[in-house]
Length: 343
Image (cartoon, rainbow, N blue to C red; front, side, top):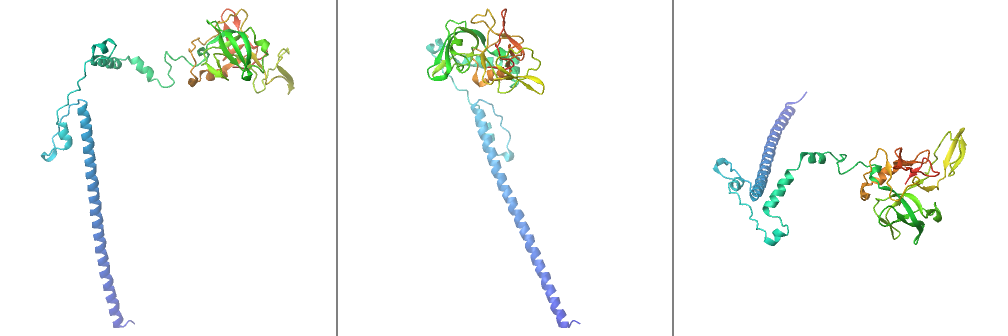
C-alpha cells in the first residue's frame, strides 16, 4: 500500500505537469498569432508593391497613347485623390507632329508627300478580300503565281551537242557547246567520260534541262544538264520477255523465271525523236508546261520531281507513266535502258 507521503509527492508532480501544459499552450497560441500577423503584413507589403507597378505601367501606357494622339477620359478617384494615371489621363491630347512640306525638287523627283503616304495606307487597307484569303490558305495553298511542283516546272528542250572536249581540270567531265535554239550556244559540263566515248558526244541530239541555276564545275560554268537514263543499284525483273535485245543486261534464271539484271555502270543519253530540232520543247501529257525562268535550289523542285522520271519497259522516258513527247514528232527514248531512272 502507498504511504501518505508518496501520495503527496504524486499529487505535487501532477499539479506541476498541468502547470507546464498550460504554459506550453499559451506559448503555442502566441506563436500562432505572431506567424499570422507576420504573414498578413508580408502579403500587404507585396500587394502594395504590385499596386505601384500597375500604376507605373498604366502611366507608361497613357503616355504612349497621348504621344499617338489618343484622347483620354479621366475617371473619378477614390477619396477625392487623383492618382498618377488619372492625372495623365486628364492631360490634353498632344497635337500631331507637323511635317515639313516637300521641296519642289523632291516633288519632281517622285518624293512622297504626307497626303501621298496617307493615300498609300488607304490603298493597302483596301486590298481585295480574295487576296487575303489566298494568304490565309496555309503553306499548302497554291496561288496563281505558284504552279504545282511537277515536271511542268522543268524547261526540257531538244539540244544539239555541237562539240565536246575533256575538262582541263577534271578527268571525269566533258565540256560541251550545246545549241538549244537560242542566239548563242550554252556551255554544259557533264560527268559522262566513263560512260560515253568522246566521239559519240560530237554533233548529236540530246534532251537538256535548261532552267537549272548555272553552277561552276571545276572552274567552268555549266548552264544546263544533259538528261540521261541511268541503270539502278539493284536488280530489275522483266518476266516473259521473248527477245534478248537488251544489250546492257545480263540474263539469268532464278526460281524458273527469266531475269534481266541491269549492269550497274550503264548510262545513256536520251534520244529525241527523228526530225527534232534544237529548241523543240518536251511536253508531258497531263502536266502543262509552265517552266520557272530559273529553278530555285532552295525549293528543291527538280529533287522532288526526279524520283518519278523513268524509262518504261520500251525505253520511253516518262514522268509518272506519261511519255516525254516532242509534239508532232514522237517520243523521247533510251536505246537500251528500260525501267531505269532518268537524271
